Image 1 (cartoon, rainbow, N blue to C red):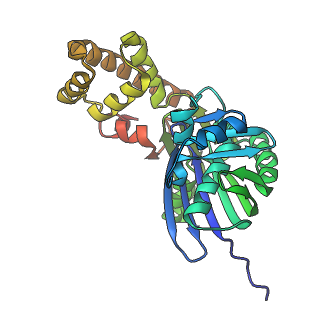
Image 2 (image 1 turned 90 degrees about the vertical axis):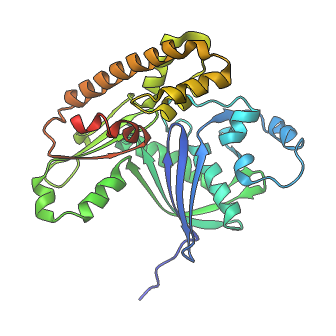
Image 3 (image 1 turned 180 degrees about the vertical axis):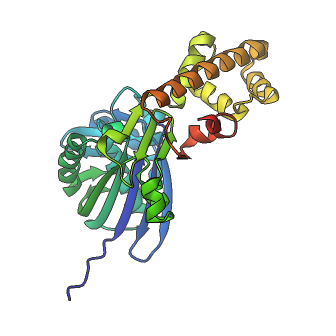
Length: 324
């Protein structure tokens, strides 16, 4: 009997809008979890190396992520944000910047696991439900697989042999977990929803008679960024969206007044306390209304059970998601 091939790494990547999340395990069963900012900046490689040369001392891989492919040179993560005016363009499809993000994350893993070049992987990638059609999957495969063969990194050329590539919609892992923990009879009889609300999107998978079809996958742009954008519109230039995101999360849905007050004192804007809380409350009302409207528009009201996931789902859960 032919012995099955064991790759150097098995990796799962969730290309989140605010953070890219990674779970990895090597051939010796050493597990690792990573998170990296989703920012990307495309810039000439000479400029990247000029900035690199300004640093001295040991730098962790996460602080110096860049790759060069046939499509150009890209800086990613914290390095892109802090030194190259990188941005996280929420209007772009996640496919548009998927390749440099994935390559950068794999380079980080190569450094942390002390792998040489080449090394082999099995790779799983998650995309929003609405960006995971057959054409989307084919496009990512056609762009990613050739790029893995050789690309430039801060430590030189890197070659990765890909043994298997799985591209699934967000929520697929939650669905598989639920399926494994339900009897086949219960799964077939239950109309089950898997609702994830992240920073950029809300995603819904609906299991009908034990399976999920393309028409039972739904995506909209009602992630946490919608709430922050609405709040920003009411507060004007007084706060950045990044600052608003921090205080809204810290204050919680019920809006802990002392938390907001402390935030404003740090910025020297304590006089804006009442107006900021009012702006958050109005934005929350609008956001929840829009989210529930979308939920009904995709005919999810007939669900018999819902599993929630995502950072925004956690923000909403204790107060409002139970009413869905």
